[in-house]
Length: 112
Length: 415
Picture 1 (spheres, chains in turn green, cyan):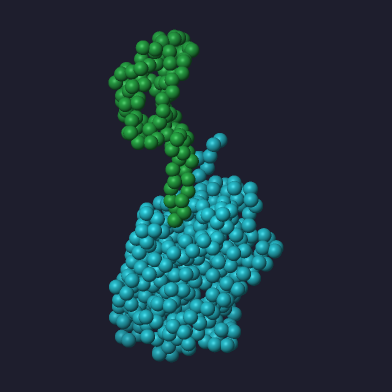
Picture 2 (picture 1 turned 60 degrees about the horizontal axis):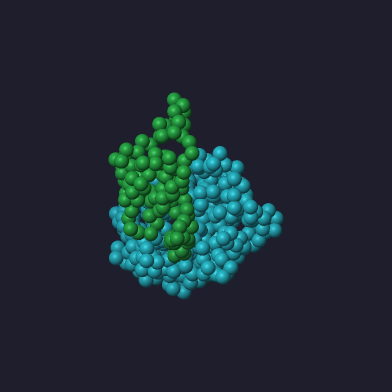
């Protein structure tokens, strides 16, 4: 099992959600986050004075998937979240040791 | 029959005066919203409290001594003991007033509050609440009434010269109200210093964006509306063809100048910054209003639009210049009311032949020197006794917690 964590542009959240539903992903967790990457924030203007916004708002999506679904999931996210412009975000994949469904006590891929 | 017509005129003029006064009172709400919108959210409660409290202080102090200083001609009438309910009694037919004396007081008192409201914006986010209110007591009780006596009151300046004789004219108070408020504000800001973090060590100007631009926009609309009372009421009558015409022209010109100011400031800001800056557009509308206030009854609508437009251009450059001089004014009050207030005074002779440039200059200098000088003395005395600035940590935490112990938006706080 893998935990796929994607940081995407907030306005792309709906597209990503739809794409993941289409390939059969059962559940996702979404968090509003802030951060910066290589673009290092951006500048805004107020009454003639520029100021730097260091941390831009992004959305973090976490999906737990079975090994067989990993490539599909990554492809769905990268396709849906891609605008071709800077700040599109990243996808991180990490191993997932165990999953437990609280209601039934099921574990492993059964619980995803 | 003639008496009936007079009674009708008396009733109508009094009614008009009172409604205009209520409109000007509403400008206090406009200032409160504008300032609450342009400060950071951690200073919202405190700026709102300053605005509502200064209004109450102004009303009370003007009642205790301000009004009699300004219009009493040496007669002191604490709590208006000398104001009769009837403006006609004892007066001959020729010089009887067409409105109630207490209506005159009501109309005058809301102007004092306006002058004081200007100060609160400029010193926002760093001045101590009680020091500010202590200053409000002196400003509304003495400083403003003194210069008001020399101008609208017709008294000689310390017995030396009379401004009216020199050709000074200020219809609704570009100088007497707006520039006076800005002069007091400038004195305060110079002693107070800039907000922490506003100016960098190498002279760079850092932006401190306002928390709530919808509130700032609402505040500007409220001020724009209240200004019809401010300028329109200053005709002082409406119950005759002549005065009704004058009122209508004043309304039209006041509106035109605000529109001209907004368009000009918006375009200048767009050209200079590359983006349409809402706060500059709002300041532009107010600048247009201040510019026309000294004489809204003689220009044509085109002239009023142009005068407002000049004010709108001037205010943007003034705000940028004050920032270069490290005079930190979070809402642009000194530029809008002071710099453009002076412009308004100097534009009067363009359309009003009864005034003169020299008279306007002497009047402006008199108002500025008195209000700035007296304010500097009072602010300095307050600085030496109560202190005028909140502590560095309090400023970081916000004046809301430091001075009021409550936040404007507590539900957004992490618990």
